[in-house]
Length: 207
Length: 280
Image (cartoon, rainbow over all chains, first blue to last red; front, side, top):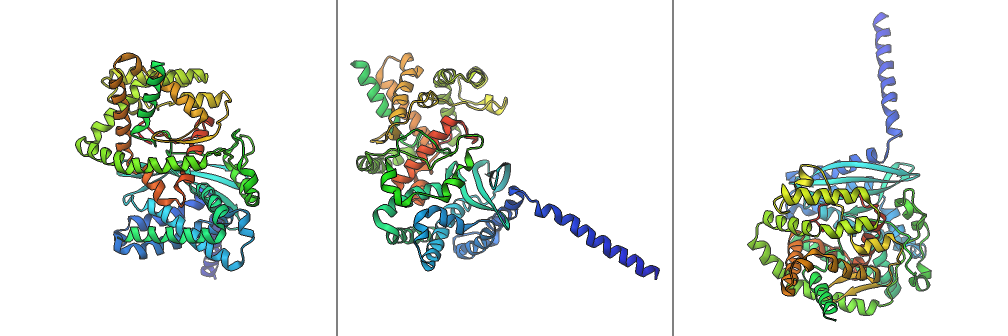
């Protein structure tokens, strides 16, 4: 009898502590939401088991699995195309999202991969409504690469929708380029250019 | 007339070794510049909806932002010069810079960079004062005094390392921007690289306010000094241009965007990147 009461109290305490600990998770800020994703990416990049050009495919696969949890590639694709996006059918949207995700993978992960001893240092966050910027420094053997993450709050929490590497905003920069290509060559032309670029970047990394 | 030719030549030579110098550098974000949006008509179909709204994120406490507007009516000519500069980079600049890097160790090149930056302190002081940035002006003076003495003629940067005094770079193009002078049309100058009307004027003034022009009468010495300083800067930042090319689908547009964002960010002082003067 007495033993049962003790167990009940113990169980209650456990349940209570869980619910207490889970509170901050719901109220997590952009940095808290970004941290697990970045930690995951860095862990794979700095893991010797994944090092080297011959492991690139496997490494990228794992990195992208982690990245996709914290990055909102669907929103990125939508934003980078602007109005053109709405004229596309479901299949075209999906195809474009794949291509653009691949391009960002090459530009962002490709850049980070060079820093195999990297440590991420969080330099602060700024929140404005549903948008936030988290500033980080990637430090690697005395070299500092400033990377900022522009994030958007949605139902699942904060997700990245733009990356600023050394001050250059990837999404913004690609948007300007896409706009010019779309004007001349329409969506089909853009898809061709993207496919070509991805192919050359993939090839270069493997050689 | 003689002075005019001097300036023009210096102007060309300055950028000779690094048309990236103030260009495709670290950029930041901020919109809302007064440039005419000539693109609006053509791009009507592509006008952004939700992106605008998301985009104004950066303007904490600033004005509501539009999608960055720009004026590039000379695009066909600019593209031609862009291609020319690209060839110049791969055929001349890069080989020269590579040899230079092989000959001189990194530390030496860094010290040369420090020296070059230290000498240019009067430009920074003048422009900080013209923008009424008194605290920054004080830091510029302190940095100059500390680095010229403790830093042994400016070859070291103890002001940053020991005293935590970060560089406060300001040029006349920025001053004009702060004063409200509009950017004018975008240029991609042959040899010089990306610029606009405002920055071109600003650059010419900077060349003229550089102490080197007054210290040394001999033109070739000044010119050589400039070329050396630019090659040195490039040798410390070898990947900047090549990364831009590698990851872009249209390098011309990409560089234009980087340049506009970078310069606008500098003028708005929203740039929180703490870089040293030796970094592009």
